[in-house]
Length: 174
Image 1 (cartoon, helix red, strand yellow):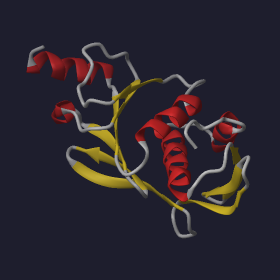
Image 2 (image 1 turned 60 degrees about the vertical axis):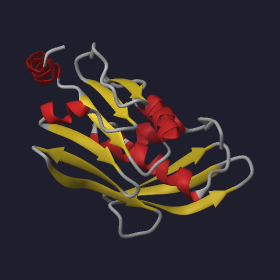
Image 3 (image 1 turned 45 degrees about the horizontal axis):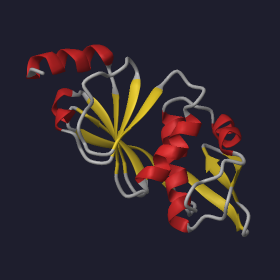
Image 4 (image 1 turned 135 degrees about the vertical axis):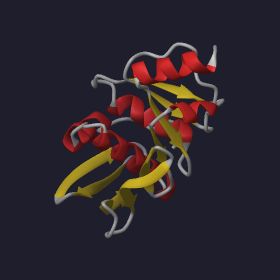
């Protein structure tokens, strides 16, 4: 496909490119699938960094490696170990910091880990919402859950809806 045609397609369809760094890519996509299941967005996982030829309008593409087509985009997202950034016109800006301690924009408190489940409270903009996930999760997996929650919030999914969608969700490999 020609470079010119790619630019036109990307500007018309406006795909949402999300590059995942610093968190478990497979787990992140699993969680995103549940969070965005009832939303208007279609989501797709790209392991190899190659942008698919056909992209649906308003599709969210989750990349493990940076694709070459980032040059054609005016905006894309990067999810790192402790924040979600937007990159507009090649200038990164932190949208939400997240973490396991107070002081981040979105953080967890009251973590309870049992053999069967993990529950905690997510604190964001003065709201405190409980989350229950199965089975027990370590600190790194909880950070991946927070990263998925952050991106859901950025895309307009209500925090309570995210909690309800993830309630009882069985995380594979945990």
